Image 1 (cartoon, rainbow, N blue to C red):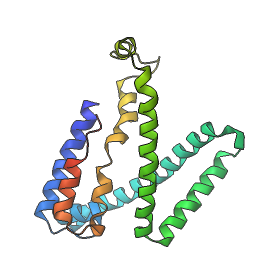
Image 2 (image 1 turned 135 degrees about the horizontal axis):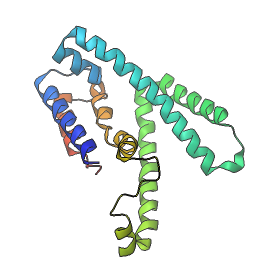
Image 3 (image 1 turned 180 degrees about the horizontal axis):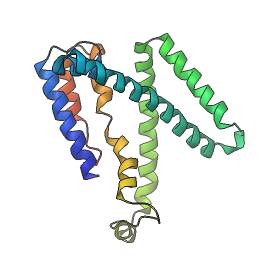
Image 4 (image 1 turned 60 degrees about the horizontal axis):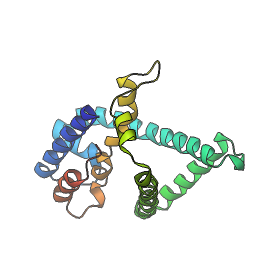
Length: 188
């Protein structure tokens, strides 16, 4: 967990440095990379960044689909049906426009806040010193290792790019990107 946070912190400091020393416009991370490393490197990194973003959407849909199936098995929907519905909803959000999609994110944020609140409401009464002691040491199942846990945890600390990618929607990105990136609460 510490390694993941260290990587993210160094990235956040680098992004903040680039944002304060470069005139930031729309284009997010690609814009910052292409202006700091040049068009050639920016183009090569931009293609990889685009592919990573496109693939991440597919992975998010798969993750949502599995969670939805586990939560509502009585509906009897196949993974393909749920994934198709989710993709159509995402397409409609994007088709309407980026400003509308950002408004939808506020609703998603409210749902996440309620989920966290319900987690803590259920976890705090059940907390005990015995549970804390049992969880202080790692106990990997057979075949698992610290690297598998890192692979599971690392995506949770990489959300800083969401703020950087909104550079075109910010009034003063050179000021807002460093403030938002560095003021975000630590995930560890």
